[in-house]
Amino acid sequence: MSTRGHCILSHGFESGPDATKVTALAEAAQRLGWSHERPDYTDLDARREVSELGDVPQRLQRLLALAQAAAQRGPLVLAGSSLGAYISGLVSLQVPVAGLFLMAPPVRMGPAPRLEAARVPTTILHGWDDELIPAQEVVDWAWSRRARLLLVDDSHRLSAHVDTSAEAFAQLLQRL
Image 1 (cartoon, rainbow, N blue to C red):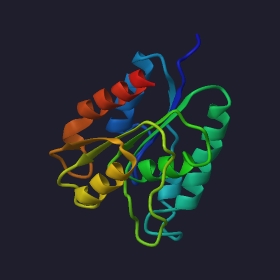
Image 2 (cartoon, rainbow, N blue to C red; image 1 turned 180 degrees about the horizontal axis):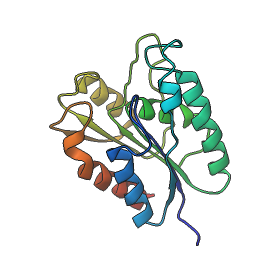
Image 3 (cartoon, rainbow, N blue to C red; image 1 turned 180 degrees about the vertical axis):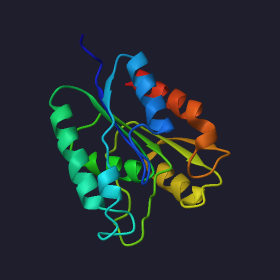
Image 4 (cartoon, helix red, strand yellow; image 1 turned 135 degrees about the horizontal axis):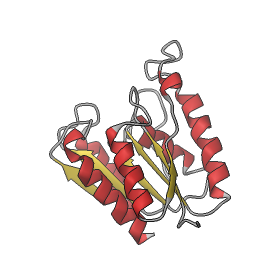
């Protein structure tokens, strides 16, 4: 069976590939005829000797390798939550992607480079009450690239908006 494309769904820090949000995105992708994978970064997140956020460079490399392989097979969409959104944005600068779906994206992370991403159709879902990433920073980042931005009454985990996440992701995939 051929698919419309492939989605790589990257979980957030100290989460996992079976997390509620990336599972909901996977179900939305499958329903619309997109193949998908959910890389497991838990081994890298546990490497606190590298940084308080684990081994972010190796997270980037893992996603980059998967994205390069997938992009050769057809349209690719990168999606992620928090640190998963950050690495998805950075990898989109190195691999051709059809779209990006970023949940609670950290536009700044301490000494790390500011979030950058390919200029492709992008949907962002962010909580007004995100305790880690101020909503205004995400609004400014989204505005500069004219990304679709959905602000919801939620915190960083977006746990009250899992269905909203899946619906917004499905809308992005349908537009591509």
